[in-house]
Length: 352
Image (cartoon, rainbow, N blue to C red):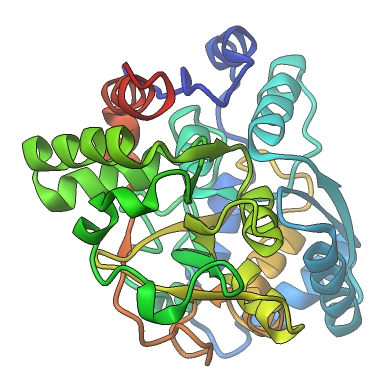
């Protein structure tokens, strides 16, 4: 079975595959937490909070920023009196730690919130608990996969961000085709691991036309590659990269509020990726884990919105709430990962 764990940015493939071979079966708590999640009685929240308080704590593994993690933890603890312990790293390292701990028989993880692509990997390695929470009904389309083992907490909309000192608004491209003008040579920047964006762009154009478009874009403009969306945003801020094609919305909005020389446009098709959360099927604090999971889909959404992120809850107001975008299909992309990773490297990275 194709697991997708050979992704370029995951440098630890052998360790993951070894861990995947020895994952234990679901914990005995699986049925009880699933039943509580699906319970519709009027006393559901009361029962859940009481059980979570009895457990006393919840362990969160995440790649979200320290600022967000701290705000979420403090808000949750103030509301429910349940302590949140946070372990933070980048997405690949979180995945590696989870699978390594499973191999060794440790069950530290309660809740995980990382990129949805990596969450789909954890689903394939049988790490996550399927849940049917009533709160997922308020999420945007595509936020919950058919298997129900994770749910999106926020969306990263890929903006085309530009330095207002380097580019005049009147000179901005109106379509992706406009970027094929030689005047953009040396002006463009891409995040070096945006294979998902590349895949969705090509799919939207039609594969043959889409691949030719990117070959032309690279030949004409020679875009620079920068590893990390935050780094790309910062280079747009400094003017080193006048126009970044795949900058996350929250980076642009926050910087613009502070008076930085940055603004954005949104060329069609608008592409977005999500970050999601899931509960371990071997959680030692299953009730606290479920309570935190549902907090992230409700009150926690306001924390994301206040920090300029695009919440996955469609009822929460945000700057980009009504912007039409295509949300990447993680399972479909992962199933074809090798093909698209090879194409990305051939056309964008190696540029042969």
